[in-house]
Image 1 (cartoon, rainbow over the protein chains, first blue to last red):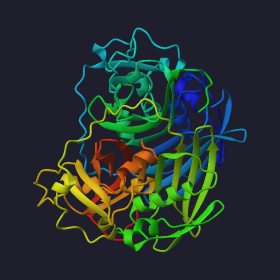
Image 2: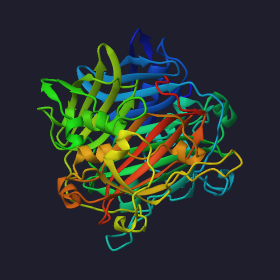
Image 3: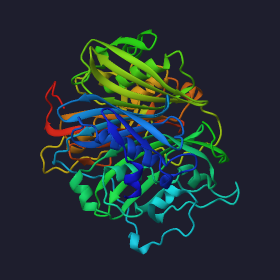
Image 4: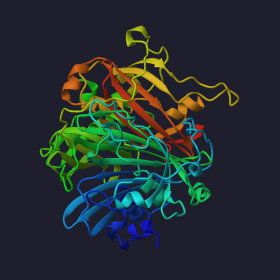
Length: 276
Length: 276
């Protein structure tokens, strides 16, 4: 079984699902947030009342996910003719760990227009994988080829700040046929923008992330197990929080998803297990 | 009482608040979504357990808000040392009309960096208000000065598509001291991008919107009742939905908020009361 399928595996009974964290996606203090988002998305997709395709998902990381089992509570909030709203919460014991809202929608063909421009970058086959990677399991779950914006550490505070922009070809490692779970997972697979700008490993954590899907199953089938081009950027770092905007493009130029998140950061050395 | 204060007025008892729609913010089929978002934000801010400042809010418009009274259910989901999570739902009778999640956070001073660039545009005093406005009450609740991207109607399908980008100075009308409610309200105060691109009045509606706040009360006090510069853009129109990204800048160059939304659109003439 592919690690992403193992990480998102659930035992479902009615509105409740039970799963467990995956060491294969371990991050600093808990599982990688993208895999957690994919798991909650799967819980909603598996709901017997679910109709149509994922359109939007917001996930709020309320507390670190502890290693081990978790419960997901899926609530169907509203079903219309072509849109449907769910909320999914993760609990560990009586603690609320994650809240999320999801929208599903019918996606008719029709007017198609992409004013956002896919960056012209080298093809992934022309780019080597990074030689050094951090010893975090989740990073190994992606084959990343940086066309621009690989994070570099600053020697000292006199060095200029780094750019918040990254262009990186990504696919699952091992490769896996693209689906909504993988796309949700990838929408969080950018290194934290504060690392890129400040050029040091500081305390960071995503607090809330929203992903919009602009594709249907035929678009995903067209991607297959090919790379997608991820572009990430940021507008502001202020009062302990930074934003991130991201775009995920198929190689053929379809904008599959857009995503945004707000991250906590403190310009202090990373301390495992630190609480916000 | 200012129309925004009247629209967001609530009678609160414990975790429940009761309010009513405001004709002063009426849109095509219900109240303007920005004012509704501000009302749910107020319900969470008024909660006795609320700590610190708004950081992030996601609102899902599940169904049209009917004219009249509504109930808001506020749930405190998790309180950490410096972050706090709420969910607020709007009900009319037993129907779920809106779901939302909100994050509040302490905002310490520290590293400040704004790689996003505020556009250089004419000052609002150099720009006249639009001569023609649609006969919708909510539009009159804003004093808008378009520096670029005022929507223009296309004569026919042979005419080139419009740009999705708008730069518009905005303030409340009548003017009002800026606060988080006003900022939330304004983050939705852009005309729907599909109008701008397709150049005709078609069926549109925001399905989900997320706003991140990058400011504290001192920043808002500095704005006072001055204009803020709103910038809106879009990356994609596909399969019946379009995205929108927005930035709200103070005149002095502080990025007060960023916002994104996904909108339903159908290239059909607008029909009042249409259901998604």
